[in-house]
Image (cartoon, rainbow, N blue to C red; front, side, top):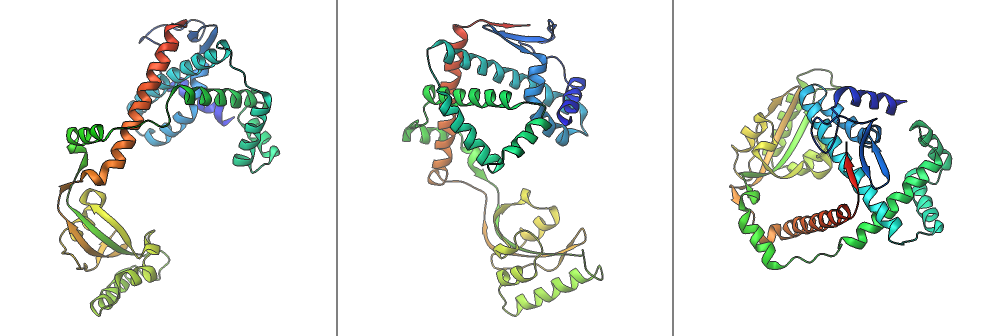
Length: 321
């Protein structure tokens, strides 16, 4: 029921998707791929999970929401076309997939997602308005698509040191960091306290303990009420943009080893300590080598995927409406 309501909301917000802008739909058809039809409704159902997230994120900005939904529909349509092309290639190229393989995959998914509880699976499928047979077909198609992609897109792409170094030199701006501080924090909230002034009083007591030589990390594990408590308040290296203005002003005004006074902020009291200071700099190649390699591998796999899909399109019938 929830999915049907969301589908209606998408229809109200978004414009038709097609290979060309402002093209009229014929009987709800978006695209024909070989002998398979992709309808407008197919697209809306396929993108509904993504649209649900977009609605939550951009509900107060309707124009931007509509743009994002239109993009999601375009992306969704392209993905559906690719699925049809890949499945058609599997069926026409003489590949075979034993039922036993799909049964094993179904068992794996039931165990992974539902803890092996088939009743829970059935209830979930019913809430989504689908059947076990339809779900089984979906699992089969997803398995085939994954196997076909693995066959045509290399999982072990090798990137030469030269390409990594060239990418680094050509993209130095991506590896620039602003001024940073290695920061620890203690946050005390007014919630569940008898008086609004108690956070400030407690923070001042903490400062006294720090001045007497107590460990900031130990005090953070005892007193702090934020998510960094278990790490002794350690936030690692942070840039100014990662902090509220009031905290940033205090943090970047301290020298290494210094702690702040009480910083009052929205019903909370903060004490911070800077352990080290690092001026703006460019990350070195050894620091970012693995990151660059992952980026280049992803780019190469995307290129292989695009070339493969284009080959499938070249020998297929794809008609937009």
